[in-house]
Amino acid sequence: SLYKKESQFVTLIYGEDVDIGLFSVEAPNYLIWETFTENDDWIIVTSDSPTTGSGDVEYIVDGVDSGISRIGILWVGNTPVYICQSSFSAELSQTSKEVSRLSGNGQVAFEVGEGNKWSAVSTVPWIRLANSEGEGDGFVSFEYDENTTEGERVGRIIIVDKVFTITQSDEDSSVPRWTISYENLKGASNPNPTKYDEGSEVAFLPLTGVTGYIFTGWIGNYENVTGNIQVETVTDQRL
Image (cartoon, rainbow, N blue to C red):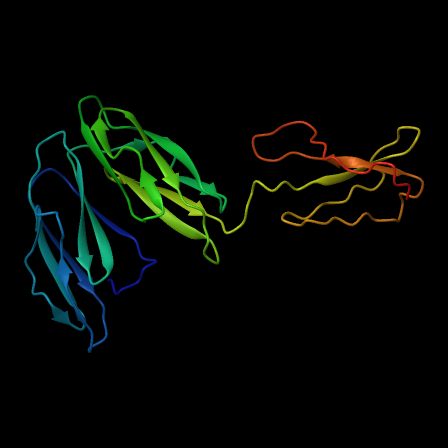
């Protein structure tokens, strides 16, 4: 059942032959809602619209040639129901990805079989596809915008009949988590390592256990970088 829930995500899968669909909608008795498609004339709504309160949505999915996939949207109020139709299925190399709040790009590979014509769509405006159709095995390249909302958000890419989910944080994972390193004049190091909070601009050095040592820099790793990372700092500060 559906009722104007933006967080809801629904896909319905159909083969190449003509088929009939039916699902229910839950809504308050006073609410008037419509069922419609925009440019997908192969999805034919046969139930009454508009409708008041709860009710059923009935529709017909027209047939499609073998080896062709298509994805349409059946709108119920402001809730999209994605209708996926094809005579074949896709196998994705991965089904999800987590990204930081910063803008970026990526791709997902898939297999559909030689000669099969695939299609793909993004379900949200902040994810844009560089390629949305093709033939045979391949990949979909995508870009995503910076997350300026409060809290994480989720978007999806549908490829033939499978869903690739992108979860975008409201934090910047590229900000490293550093470990403070100390060395004394004799070369001893790390008597009392201290974590540097992600996203902080200031780190406080603990005095306990490091008397006589000199703060020499930061060491640590972050995504796609290995080895020590030295940050320029004043090193001749005896504790």
